[in-house]
Image (cartoon, rainbow, N blue to C red):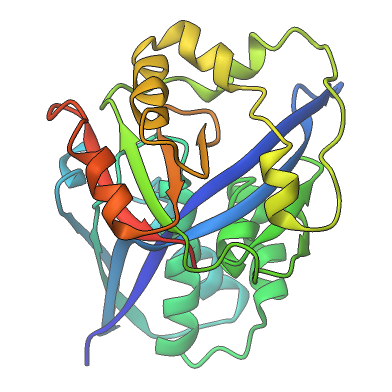
Length: 275
């Protein structure tokens, strides 16, 4: 019987880069939140392990063992000694390499889905530990709940979500990819200070995304999107992750739709709500 799981789109409400490490990675502080929508994973029991990819952005991905969905499935199968296989199908609805955790969210959704399908007795923390090496955003995507991330983003503190849940969310991407590695490399090494602690909403409003100006220099459409979204006076407008997806949060659906109507029709957009 076919089962499904949503790969919830990841939003960085704020992202502060604190220092460059000797191993080339960066110490960050970030506020993770998640949309109620995203890609969708389907799975059914099978003798072998296979992956098919469909959806608006499916043609941009390869359904081979290098795909994070397959890597996740293979790692869980090996770790838990699973003898069964699974027929996996990914409905790729989010743009690829767009700063909203597409591949990481897919991996996390695969893990949650296969835990049910294969009857694995694994906690969210165990899944995070097993899969963290596949991508820094995967642990946050496993939980898919508001959290404070430190280190490379893998050290998580779950936060009270009451100040942000059910806020109306508009995601916009110019359908131009930007290189995460290039953007982090362009960081000037200046620590702009820590994220505030406490209330996640207040911390987000007083925070920033240190990667936003770096990404906008590479992809000027980001600035245009942010300017367009700001015209509707949202509660918060910012770029997510390393871009190029930007987001705006509104108090009601009507304001969101007014803003969406002003967007360039060539851009990708998705209306949702925060989980």
